[in-house]
Length: 290
Length: 335
Ligand SMILES: Nc1ncnc2c1ncn2[C@@H]1O[C@H](COP(=O)(O)OP(=O)(O)OP(=O)(O)O)[C@@H](O)[C@H]1O
Ligand SMILES: [Mg+2]
Image (tube, rainbow over all chains, first blue to last red):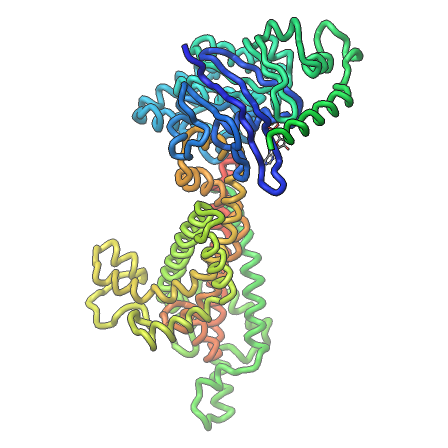
């Protein structure tokens, strides 16, 4: 099977005078059915990568180099109208904050059935039945009732389950999850991760999983991409990466991550010298590519 | 919003109305101008004036007059108009439907204008339609309703007479409504000829009232729409594959209406106040026009009855605005 998502040498530039480079020759691939973890500190550009794929990059940002291909089709410069049939249908999205991602004035029901009716051409009752089944698949009790409720009547965990149901509704080929658990309680985080894993196994959907949390990556992902300062520093199979990280930054990231087998006081912050060196490298790259 | 809440609101309107009643009662008696003097032909004797004063109970001290009037009012008797010699309640009730129809048409026009303009401006954000909407709403906002009225009368009535500029209906038309709600009746009885004529008459006064409200609504709604477009729930529907138009009409607009109603609620009350001058300018037979006549004639019972009617309209408008808010906002609705 061919690669599902292939990002090649992607540059994203903000404004023009002076231009700010948000992504620097980013390349990454997601194979069908694979879970790829995208990790890095805050500001690394993880969200920007996903926004380019989804066609929702900031209005003044432009792709100035490279390409994004989905299912062997170049989608880098699709117009809004051309991209729309893919969104919610082939590529779906699980947002970071379930508290703000649902339309507060609309009941849950229509927020699930809309994609089914739009993309799968289901009738009202078919869509309704499918929505009920989806709510059961994400293990929400009393799905009938939830369909009639408004978002504010559900807890954060329940809302994230609804959002996951929406993402998986049309059996997409790729789901992009941008830190889907950071806004949730620790106990709920585990359940949500389990749920994503379960749905992924059942559907064979590929997932691009964006996170800070290397522990989650270790448990969930087949492949890991490490980003810093808008560029990819290391990309490797998860097992290989955890056994033998090659990039100094990856090792520093590991050392900065709490683990159950290591007391918290052994945590080392990422060395300032390393960050400085990476920033210096980025400047050199920018000079080369300008 | 519960029935209980509405009843409570209506109950608390009573002290407000009593306050308004006292205020207007005292004011119309303190300001210069004598209703009796206006009624009598020149050369009437002081004796005649005194007899009439006693007849209308105007010779007693003000507190005593007030108690007598209030007692009558509580029994539903608002007295008799001095100048028109007809019951105040009957007079007001015969004119009120015309004003209500005018207000409803004006509000509907304003809301429709504002929704189209604001959604259009946000849809074409940063391009010329947005500039047109911003410019026009600023201009319209700077001109008050009565000036629009005078302008319409001048331009459309005198220079370019395509629409009637006075009255409510063509008196030669064979239309005999059973109620005062002519427009509603014409619509229900499918009398399209009467409906068209009524619409022609109501259009200019309604437009004059609607324009400033429409401009204010457009401004606030546009800002709220822009806010809504930056929310996470809009990002989500974007990646669900919604078109821009669908996002604006189906998602952003419903959310933007909530702050818009909060911020513009008071403007709807202003519109009620605006009817007085607009009805006068267009000789439209509503309670606003009646109020001007009543003031001209120092018709104390009628003024009092009309001011109370306006106060009730203000209170009901505020209640309706609050109800609209709670219907739009599911969080409030359920608590
Ligand atoms: N709307 C925007 N307009 C311009 N620049 C932005 C915008 N959003 C983010 N940026 C910048 O782009 C860079 C990458 O941000 P991005 O959100 O992709 O980081 P991230 O890796 O997702 O971080 P986090 O873990 O905090 O979510 C940052 O330097 C940020 O300041
Ligand atoms: Mg992010």
